[in-house]
Length: 275
Length: 245
Image (cartoon, chains in turn brown, yellow):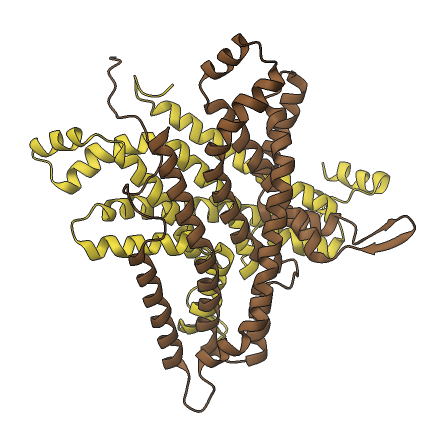
């Protein structure tokens, strides 16, 4: 058995260099796709009935408000998950074995449980009202759903933090130590600032996953875009609207997620050139 | 064992119907098998899509590359649940129906098939990217060496590039497949009788939400752990000397 290397070093997925994250060509494709979809929707409507396009326009304000709830849920889940996840991730690199093992277990548990099961868990297990200082506070469905999404976000952020810290060369720790930095100082002033840049792309990837998971909350009865689309379809009672309406919803998510994906790639590439 | 769980119910109130009630045990067993079937089939299909897509991405015929790029961009940036609804409700509405044994009109494509198609296409889009990154790690000179030995493009891809690329991207692939197994729960939404769906039926009948939830969580974590273990074994077996750790 030889020990000759047979491969180049592995590089994570990168697009061609020099590609701007919002390329004009892609925007043109997207516009074309939207036009085609609209045209197809137009062609599908029977002359007697309202055309699919105008039906979609009619429902846009309502479904749009549902989409705002999707965005709200994703932002809150992401913010809360990031804060707790950062702490959990730092516990994972703690010097105390019990802390390390405990936070590792928590991270693995919430990372490996399906999101939908987590969501059911929070919807059914959390109280629907709590008493604070003698006052009864109702917890709406969407808040509990948001908590359900926060837990997996927390675990994923924890892994991102651990991965970023471990990806730094050991020399950084040793250099800081030789300059008489304490462990806390090393983390705050040397390690974490360098980690931030590495953590940004996976963190944004995670955000894209979170926004794409928010329709899951429709299964547990949150009135977000998906639920409202189904409601609109029930109100219209027309089979030929199914494809245009669900297509429009898909397109709405695509329009929101895709620039984020491009931006993430662009950041990844930019970091790659410098590192 | 049934006695023990019946005892547990009377003493502690923990009601694990699936361990003593034969009806619940049977339907939950089927649901478990359904989840396994859905997972295995969608893993295999998404791998095939990934390999074929990565090959098509390197094609000389530009429109083919655009189609693959469009497929990836679309399926990566839209929610899997909405995709599944789109497939099942929108496309399912226009597929023909066939009469079953008792003369009822049933759709030709079952909800299981739609779930399988949606999950495979979703995970496949990620797999194409993963395989592509692996293929990029194979040195150009290796491909040229294969070419100079008279390999065709397909031949070199199959015999030289893919085996090397596969080993490189196994860790990322591992991650994606774990995600896929967890995503099979979405089939719940279109009524495929998999674990979450049947667990929901059981806790509606017996009002044992907490117990079923915990069983469900443990089983999914068990399934994922099993998959990770198999993939790690495989990774070790395929390890290349002199590369990686």
